[in-house]
Length: 105
Image (cartoon, rainbow, N blue to C red; front, side):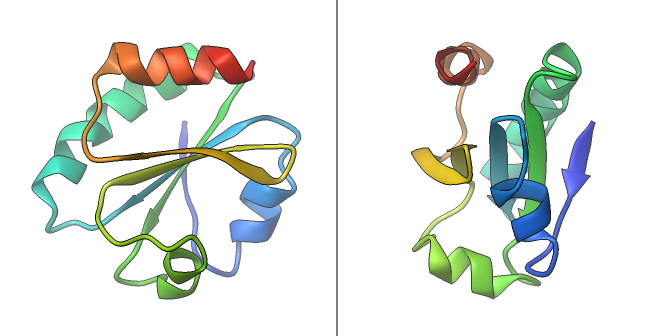
C-alpha cells in the first residue's frame, strides 16, 4: 500500500518510521510522475511489511519539497532511520528501484 502523506504527517510517517521509506514527490500534471506511479504501486505490494512507500503532492505540500531542495519531479527520496540516504530524480525502471530498495533492507 502506498500512503498519501502531507507536510503535517511527514515526520510521523517518514522520519519516525521503523521501516525504510521511499518518498515519491510528485504532481498530478507531471507525465513522468504518472509513469512511475504504477511501478511504485507494484513495488509496494512486493515489499509490504518490509519497506514503506509514501507519496506527496508537491503542489499541496511545498514545505517538505523545499526542505529537501526538490527542483524537478518525480523526485524519489529513500529514508532509513529517519535520514535521507539516497535520491533519484525522474522516472526510473522497476529494476533500478528494486536495487536501491534491496540495498536498504
